[in-house]
Amino acid sequence: MSTESSLEGLREQALAALASASDEAGLEHWRISFFGRQDGRVTALLRSIGNLPNDEKAKFGAAVNGLKAELESAFEARKDALKRTALASLTTEAALDVTLPGRPQVLGRLHPVTQTMRDCLKAFGDMGFRIAEGPEVEWDRYNFDGVRIPEDHPARDMWDTIWVNTLIDGKRKMLLRTHTSPNQVRVLERTPEPPIRVVVPGKCYRQEATDATHEWMLTQIEGLAVDEGVRMTDLKGVLYQWARLIFGSDRKIIFHHSYFPFVEPGVEMAMDCFICRGDGRDCGTCHGTGWIEILGAGMVHPEIIDNAGYDSSKVTGFAFGIGVERVALLRWGIEDIRNFYGNDVRFLAQF
Ligand code: DAH
Image (cartoon, rainbow, N blue to C red; front, side, top):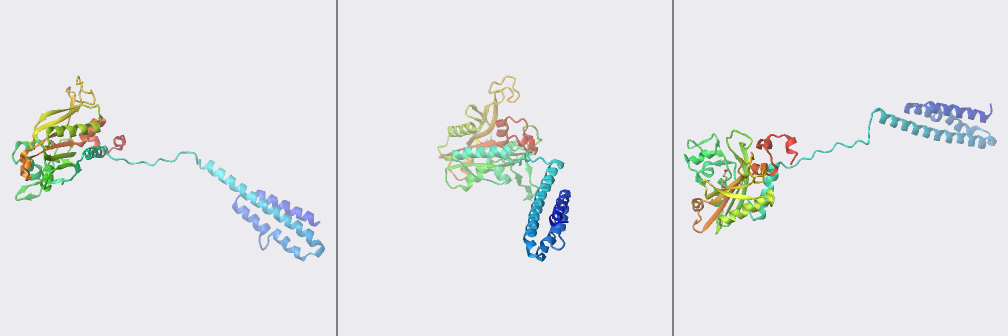
């Protein structure tokens, strides 16, 4: 057998064996049997070059090195081909569709009552009102007596109160505040001189049988402006501007006389009904009146001003109390106040 034909035989065997190697282990087996450092068949040929007589060395050496280079590149090509088929079968077998869109991140947002609260505070802030705060667990002397609702006064019946069980001097004197109005007294007491212009946001609590328009917890904003020469028209102007900012400039408002122990005179402000637009005929939402009450307000009672150490013959003020849930209901035409705290994300995600 000539040198060429034995090299040709080795070449054919090597290429055939490479073609039948079908995975990584097969490739490695092939590499060891032809190129392994100890017993590789091509390695052995390369090593034998040195033992040949000089006149044969060059020719044989060139042939063996040629074979080596050919087999090495055939090996790399086979390795690549196997890698590609493995990848292709992975994508079809695992049904991995790399073109499918990713899962979107769920983004949270502010609660509709919080949004409404912030919008209201911004509106009053732009009109020069500062934000103040007061405690949710309140003394009865601030929640009631200080705003002219003494013990046994029938006005205490306007709210069913949640009392704290601790007795002080044999009496229950602490409660979950029923409104933010005690902060009229708190702010007056701690401000040595007018002018005062504050809004006090916060949660209030009442022992309510809940229904579509009543919750046992509610959010209010108390407003208070005190200075020399503050008049009813100032109250109307501020609340009108607030209503336009929150509900839109095409809404109408009206003031009706009303009674609250801490203001004189007291008013309720109403807005044209958002369902019938003030028409009133057959409207269940405004009960045929064309108007919906949105807040209570009035001129601060002179007694409250005097009690705080001011002179009510010089200093006057107005106050208002806004139910924030009610504003949110009217703003978006929501039917049931209980939705706000029902914790159903399908409801909340709409705002
Ligand atoms: N505190 C009253 C309530 O909770 C609301 C209110 C009415 C506040 C008239 C006021 C006011 O400041 O002047 O029903």
